[in-house]
Structure formats: structure tokens, C-alpha cells
Image (cartoon, rainbow, N blue to C red; front, top):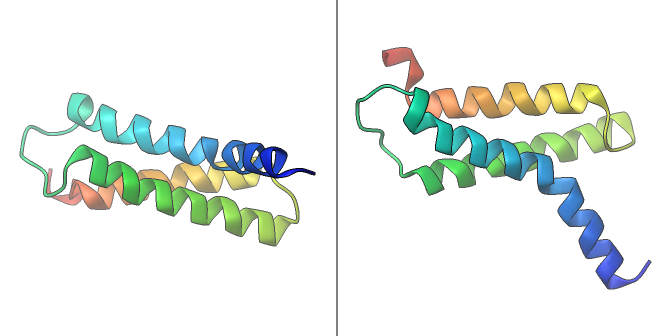
Length: 92
């Protein structure tokens, strides 16, 4: 495998985490409360992205391969919980 193929595989590995992060950060303004949040949308997206990549990497290590549904379920749960904590969802 060449360097471009490795880079393409890496991008495809982190794509679900990037999609979740952007979807959660941008939809937070639409579905969230009207109170101001502590972080900008791009900072929340970056934090949720890092959490998502960590969950995907943990799923790869624990399950032995990428793309298992259990890993994606854990990704959704972890990203949603992270977003809830970042926007202080317990206060609304």
C-alpha cells in the first residue's frame, strides 16, 4: 500500500467521526436551547471529533476490525453524550 492509499484509508476511518461532529455542532443551534453556550460551534465540533476518533480507535483495537456496528453505536452514544456535556444539557 502506497502513501496515498494509506492516507485515503485514514480519511475513510475518521469520516464517521467528522460527520457526527459537524452534524451535532451545527444542529445544536437549531435544536438547542436559546441560552448562550460557553464554546463556539467549531470548538465543540473539534472536541466531539476527537472523542469520536478515540471511540473508533478503541473499537478497532477491541473488536479487531473497523466497521462493526457496535463501534458505530458507541460512536453515536459517546458523541451525543459529549455534546450534551458541552452545551450543559442538564441545565435546560
